[in-house]
Length: 487
Image 1 (cartoon, rainbow, N blue to C red):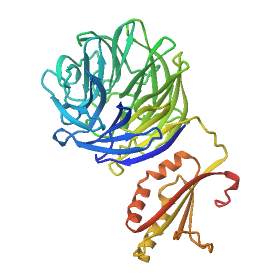
Image 2 (image 1 turned 45 degrees about the vertical axis):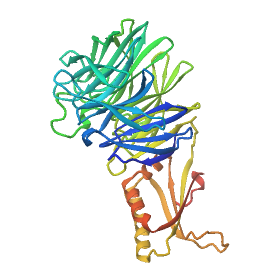
Image 3 (image 1 turned 60 degrees about the horizontal axis):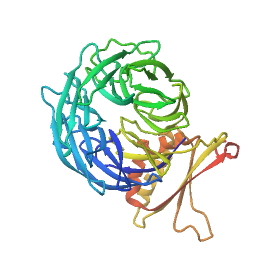
Image 4 (image 1 turned 90 degrees about the vertical axis):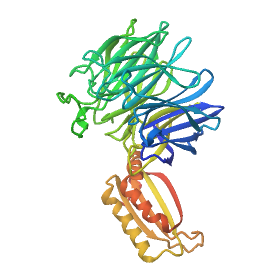
């Protein structure tokens, strides 16, 4: 199960991409959105501390496909500046902050216009950065990474009717029998491709798998990841189906059939080729609509735990992949906000964490969760208690507006099972100046998350903020039969 630990405001307009990196015994999180990159330090409890923020090249963005890695002894953060048509290289400093050291702009021979996805590939003597984008002339490009962070173009392969590189939003690499293979998802051309990568950074196409209506779900192929279990190599691909896009002209090929949502598992053969293996289909008990990011949370005992971020279900779905390549749902948490590529798994001292970004211009938050053993709470409800003390200068008229707005939350947020409030009537002298108490009841954790990040709740926070003197919040679980307030 997932348990929220912290959330912090970002300077970018929203969150598009999240990555993390370990340096000097510390853990850092990089959050990319429209216009800015925000840097935070992260501890094992999931608490975030702001470090710095940095403006993107041309004040464009959003920052996409961010990846941090060590090249020749120096730590770098590579950022795909989507509408800046460039890849930016930043040096990671000792405190986690970054400074730009190189900019690689799109040219007629490369395909990094509307750059979206980056993948670092380490070979024996050199490291390479593969770049995929979403543009009128799509394709796959490879650059050699110099020790100073600059990029030197090696090879570009133009998209055609055979390969799936039109809108590369997901990439992953496998090392198999001493050979390196790269896998790309084609968002616009609805499929996934495999490539052999050679020591000098050149690459060639191995095989290509297209969407169909029987054993795979690849319309709008989006996240791509992989894992090795029991000697088997797997690639896991998700998709955000074209049916979810309402913007006219964005989807190039509108001749598609909606046949549901699902996550597709491919097994890799000895030649590095993709072989359709298994599909986890979306049901009433899963949250798989609009998959935008798949993260490997952990691998142990010949099983892997995956986290699937969704834009349309606004959730994180946890799944288990066994050594036979069978993917099973475990649990999910409705986050209360869309996840648009911004999901990252990170481990600190055996604590498994997830960092998620909110793709909402009215929210602008990055949120952390701890992945914990599931706690069954059958016949339980969650009580949320909010006690408030208003400033002395707050007028009764201002307080009345707050009270009315609080009462109206139940109308705007149906996930609130019960809401009531009252004035303090204690005569013990222990109230510490708190005058108003609000009680909300939720049926589960997901309902609480939806409430917390709901626009109506955020509007309430804006109203009460200027006149609040202090606030105290506590949550606890109750037995359903003990909840007589709803009757």
